[in-house]
Length: 117
Image (cartoon, rainbow, N blue to C red):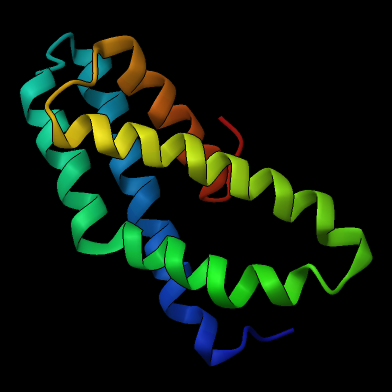
């Protein structure tokens, strides 16, 4: 089944979020997790793309999905995850994400972008 053309930008944004996750994980593995850098990167990702992505999902995709009884629980879970990630994005904008928070954020973003950790 082919994907509807209108979903392609959202899919690309999920890919970009997964790339951010990979870069954070590589930095963690290298032992060079520069928190100031990653706070800036996470905040920039929010401003550049993710806030618009969340808005599109929450205003268009999720309401449509909630009309399908079998998807209501998933939509509720995704909305809760958006809330958790919004808190991390806000903390990154204040240069306040600690290493453990950054890694939890990476894990949640990874899962929400479509792949298990």
